[in-house]
Every structure is written in structure tokens, then in C-alpha cells.
Length: 117
Length: 109
Image (tube, rainbow over all chains, first blue to last red; front, side):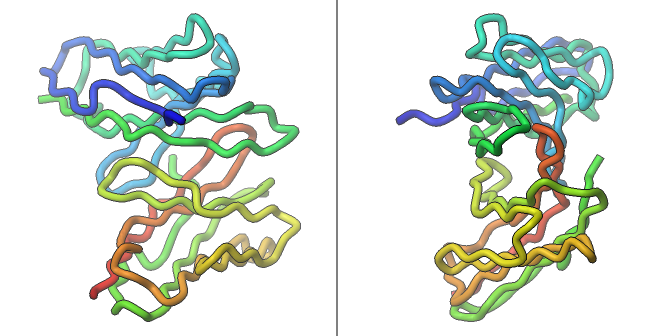
């Protein structure tokens, strides 16, 4: 079956512009996660959705970053007034459930490489 | 912020040799996982070890966990050139994963 997909695979933008990154999770997965990975580092958590709601957005670095998941499936990560420091690979993952009562493996997409010039 | 530290940061070995990577973490864990990543994309889950387990095997992979030292190790036996990748440990805290900085493994044919 299809895995997690992310579009675009690469995005180049200019400082100050607005960008949207899309994630299509595995069908039936209720939990969706966004991570950001800078060069030479491990991924850093940004936000986690359980269904349509953001259950944990404590990883978002500032109010320029926002994410939505209006129908509990596809999610969009939105970055306003992009800065050069936002350049990174943005990874999306999904799992059957994010509930703490049991572990559910997170399946990662290939990522979107964002470059802010 | 990054949770754990991994060492070595880079490891280069010959095909057929074993590769050992270590990870330290800072808080209490429910479980710890290891992931593999090729070319800066596409993390693949390798193995999970629960906090009440000390050792786990999966094929050529062996993971150990020492909760008293807050450390874990990943051993890849009989390495192959195709094992060349970055390897990350990740702590499960709540529902999120907190990754270490990773070890870049190069297996030379």
C-alpha cells in the first residue's frame, strides 16, 4: 500500500515569502507528526495531530509556523515570512494512533527540502 | 532541542565487520527506538526496545538498553555496503519522538 507522501519534494523560496508544505498520511492513520531536520542533525519535533486537532504544538519554533489538518487526513504546514534559518528538510510521519497507552510505529515520508534564499 | 547524544558521530568500516553505535538519553523513557536514514530523507524504523527490556534482536541487529546509565547501543553484525546510512536513536516521550544527532555509518566494499 501507499506510504506517507509529501509534496513538493523540494521548495526554493525567497526570504520573506510564504510557503505551504503538504503531507498525505497513510490511510486510516489518525496520528500525524511534523518534524524538521537541519543538515547534520536529527529530526526535531514540531507538532502532532490526533485526528483534526493539534494535540501537541510545543515544538513549533515561533508564530510564523502553523499547521492544519482540517479533515483528519491531509495536513499542511504553513510558514509565513520565511527566514534563511528555516531552510531544512521537513518530515511528516503518521501512525495508527498517537495515544500513550500503546506504542504505534511512526512511518515517515520522504520529506520536503526547503531552501530559503 | 536534541535529546540524546550518539557516538561515534561517524564510523567507517569494511564490509563484513561489525558496527556498534551508542546513544545516551537524558530523561526517563517508555521505550527507545532506532531509525535508519539514507541520503537525508526517509527515516525507516529498525527496532524498538522497551524500558523493561535489556536486549533485543532483529536479524543482523542487536540493541541493548541500560536504563541505569541512560544509554543504548545498536550493533549491526556482518555489515554490508548497503548498510551505509545515518542511524538515529529516538526516545519516545509522550507521543513524540526525540532524536539524537545520529551516527553516519560508511561500510566500504
